[in-house]
Image (spheres, rainbow, N blue to C red):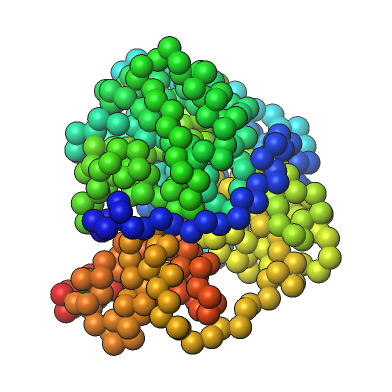
Length: 438
């Protein structure tokens, strides 16, 4: 993180389009089938444990973690395995998937029961068995995150939810506050981390008030209101705003003495410790100008996007569907793509809203520099990338970009600045990996 971050970079002031903030999660009708991917996380894909014709139940383990950095996968429905087949992911890679024809009964696997946790080892084993990953979008296996080599003094809960339209985390705080506190206390108790800070943007006063009330008698947990500025939810920014610390270049949050967990992740952990039910469903915000009934819906992991669209309805002519938040989420190419553990939203845009704006020449106004939450200089990065100058890209810290989209959002010329930054970062990291010009 650049030193000037603390005095200059503010992040973009995106619209506060949170129409579903008061929409309590509603379970959608069970789909006829689900497709559960064996790769829903950072790291090695899980190895399928079932075959065609097998009977499975809600919570049945159908995928074994394929390595240390990996995660178990569980069935989100009861029914019969219709196929175990390769499926192309959104990044172009292929992975195994398990297609399950649902029986409509949602019978829970008899093996599902609350884990016996008595010490750190059994706690970490329970977290791994749960298949919990970062549910804010990153998908990093939680049991690995909770085993840092560095000394950590703060558990930082990311409850900012700064993405446009998304409100599933907001509803998690309002509806599952006890689960959040249970999950936090378990992490503190079994990892030895002395304190926790829950960072919430100040445009969610009802969440701040509720969690302050829940933690008022616990000196180890602090609720910290944060400025309502897009970009606050990024790990490096959150650590700077909550702790006043800088993560070393190329380092991890643990290098700054912190572990960061998404608020829904820690809530899910709290539920698992109480019930033994692994990660089998997600609350997803469905919104956008082409959505007939914007709402938060609870869907089994593996539900096709098309099934969700059929449930909420589409108004007018659909132009684009974005998976996740409107700022960082990718456009969906195929509506048969299934939801995963990390799916937080589907944004339905009309054909008019999805129409690309006319791109004009850069006028060097500097807005992309002023509003970058990481304090980067996209204009200079663009020039260095055009020249394929690896050394200059390193000096400009191109690898700090986390593709938040702020630069494209504020650009008056409507240039694809974010895409250029992504290309520059990928080029730079690729050259460094190859041992190129440093």
